[in-house]
Amino acid sequence: MTTKTLLILAGDGIGPEVMTQVKRVIEWFGAKRGLDFAVEEGLVGGCSYDAHGTPLTDATMARAMEVDAVLLGAVGGPKWDSLPFAVKPERGLLRLRKDMQLFANLRPAFVFDALAEASSLKTELVRGLDIMILRELTGGVDFGEPRGIETLANGERRGVNTQVYTTHEIIRIAEVAFELAQKRGSHVHSVEKANVMESGVLWREEVQKLRDARYTDVTLEHMYADNCAMQLVRNPKQFDVIVTDNLFGDILSDCAAMLTGSLGMLPSASLGASDSSGRRKALYEPVHGSAPDIAGRDIANPLACLLSFAMMLRYSFDLGEDADLLESAIKAVLDDGKRTADIMQPGLTAVSTTGMGSEVIAALDRQTRA
Ligand code: IPM
Ligand code: MG
Image (cartoon, rainbow, N blue to C red):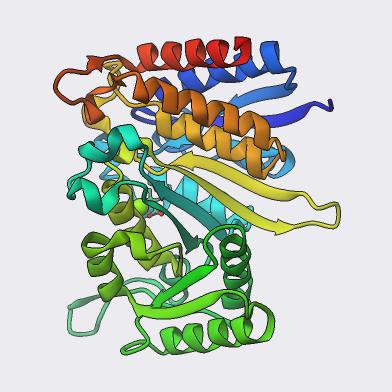
């Protein structure tokens, strides 16, 4: 098996401690499954600012472009909140997304049976839930020009951001949505605000045209973003794949994540276009943030980061069997009643971040011995 190169950017807050558990699991896959990863590490976010005065150095950016996959923990924290906009920790993450052209952000929201009761919604609404939010990640208001804050002649200040999408940006993300749906429940909801935004009108037209031309086997429905937010908490199981823009995707994916019981459970993959050899640039990260309030206490949930590594095995390396193995080990640990604080329930066994890592490794051992 050829060596796979992997850049780990653990980042800030709970990033490093959850990543420590992933590194243990990577070692396990090396020792027990013969997966050959050359792992290198770098800085992103506030820790990079502290060391280098920038949230991402050019050298780290260059490595991210070269490796087979990047695994990121989390960025940001109150320590850096008052920094100028251009060097805020989040700019490091946004530069990675933009320069690697990771336009397709896959955010699956699925409920492990053992956690259905941890959801803030009624158990029957979420049991068996399995939806995929596909967020456009390199366009829209996050990157649109003009942008900025200016002072007007009358002394008032004016803040500007621009929501902008071109046809090719819409078509390439919609293609990913239809292709994902074909492997799942063959149902896509395309979400925008065509009732108030021209970019939403264009989005709706282009997605429909693409469906009619090339994906007639997939059912397509259009939905306004505000309605989608409501439907996600009213009847989430009506959804299979939701495709939406950068800003709505940011918001709706947090909402969908919480349906599953904890933000601490959900992974994500950000993918670019395939090159001529079929390889695509990719960054994997948990959906949760840096959670500075609990950082450094060994109580954070490492499962979202571990599940992000499982997504990497599946999407970057076509190692579906190994991804299944890791996911089913995590399921076994949850079925066995082991819980970090964020998903703890009465009568179950509390474990630390490190403890959860050990449980997952023990479950991997059991599964491969059996
Ligand atoms: C996310 C986060 C980021 C975003 C922040 C940290 C820049 O909220 O990945 O959802 O807004 O995209
Ligand atoms: Mg977000």
